[in-house]
Structure formats: C-alpha cells, structure tokens
Image (cartoon, rainbow, N blue to C red; front, side, top):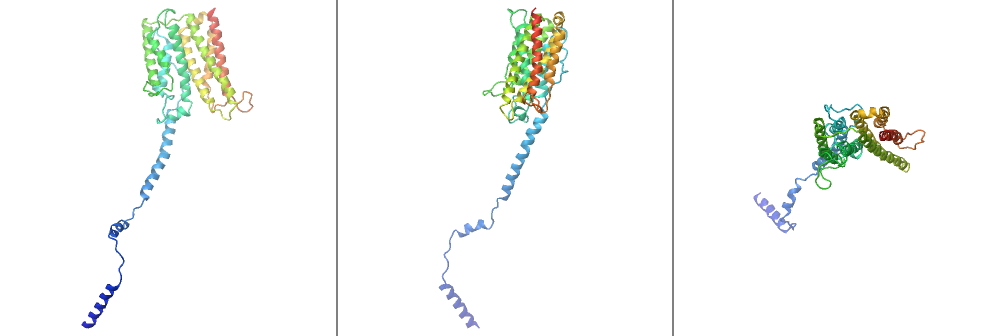
Length: 345
C-alpha cells in the first residue's frame, strides 16, 4: 500500500511539472478586487429625478401664489384720506393717502424683479399698469400745484416740499435699486414724495405755506388735467387702429388698465380739488358741470371687463373696451375744457 501511494504521488508531481501554466499578471488581484463590489448609479439618478420634480412643482407654485396673494387693483371710488384738519388741503391729503395705500398697504408692482414671488404681475398682470397710470396722474397734479397753487404769485419762489414731492413722483414706476447702477427705487422715491406732501400740508395748516385757491389757479390745474386726458385718448385711438393688424392685441389690456388707473387717480384727486375750491366753483356756477365731469371719470375708472377686447368698433359680437373707455375719457375732457373756458371769463 505504501509503495503504491508513493508511485501515484510521484506521477502526479511529474504531471504538474510537465503541464504548462498560464502566465500570471501581478496586478490581476488589484484590478479584480473592485469587481467584487460593483458600483450602481441608481441612487444618484433617483436623487436628480426628485430634484427636477421638486423644481417643476415648487417654482410654478412660488410665482402663481405670489401673484395671486399680491394682485390687487383697488378702484374703490369711495376712497378718502384722513381729515387733514382745519386750514390744510384735502387735495394734498388725498394724494399722500393714495401713495400710502399703493406703496405701503398694497405692493408696488411695476418694479417687481424676476426673482420675486409677484414677478408675474409685472410681466403678465394689469396691476402694474393700473398703478403706473395712477402715479402719472398724481405727478401731473403735483406739478401744477407746485407751479401755481403752492405760491402766491408767479414771481414767488416755489415751495421746497412741493419741489421734493414733484421730483419724487417723476421717478419712472419701474425703476429698481439697479438702473443699471445703484439708485433709489420708484417706491422709495414715492415714499419721500409722500413725506414731503405731508410736511407741506402741515405748514399750510399753520399758515407757513401757501395753498392759493384762486380762480386762475383752478383753471391751470384743470387745464393740465385735460391735456393729460387728451394724450391718453389719443393713445387709445392709435391702439384701436393698431389692434386691427394683429390677431391678438397683447397691448390692449396694458393700455386699458393704465388709462383706468389714470382716470381713477384724477377722479379721487379732482373730487378733493372740488372741496378745496368750493367757493370758486359755486361763485362761477360750474358745480353741476364739475360733478358731471367727475361722474364721467368715475365711469371710466370703474370699467372691469373680464377680458379686454380690442375688436372693430362696429363689431357685432365682440366689444371694443378701448373705445368705451375713450368715450368717457373724452366726455370728461370736454367738460374740463368747458369749465376752464367759464373760469377764463
């Protein structure tokens, strides 16, 4: 048995010696080691998918809810400012009150930036156009008050507070902190204008500033308003013509709400002017005409179509809201002209 086993072991060793062996790579073990634990990319791909889905859901919600919560076209015809007290101007008080309502109590939409939640209001909403039209009207009235009503005669110096208010309200509504260089935004300048108006009105109440309610001052104020409304009616007429050349007039609603805001601000301010100049209006017997002018402005300011249409003026089924707005605007303007003609006599 021992001899047989030894023979088999000897033959097996001889076989191993004569059998060729495959060459061995010294780095084979190092390269084969990672193969024992293959890396999968599924968790990373899953994380990227969730991130993309979150962006697609969160971003629309961010802008849509931001616009819905911010959007407000405040055309309340019953708006009145707080009583400024005896001796003060109700016109100045109501201008300051409208600025406070639109800047501090609502939100200023015209200079909203793309990263802000209410960005859709600037690039696709009507609130920005409504507010821009408002500040345009308030700026014109402030210029006239500084030029005529806020000084004793034409040769006297302009009031410094009215100058600051006029300068602040002249800032373009869409001005932001960068334009393109660092500057003060439109809403900041309007706040400064409001502060200056309040300071001026306080001095008027104390007798240290002038708010001269003469007939010629009222005439100048109303004439400036009529010119501004005439400019807007011309813009409406041109847009009515331009709207026939396109299938969808994307500018119609922007202009409509700009003029709506302008009409609203003139209605609120000129209603206060009626109280400040009530003795002149009664004396010159234009009260009925003045009230009719205010009624036309109120109608133009209260138009609220669901969709602004700029169809042909003689269309059978589709209305033309620009022509309707322009009709009441021209009625108010013609009455303003008639009042100024009476005041000149």
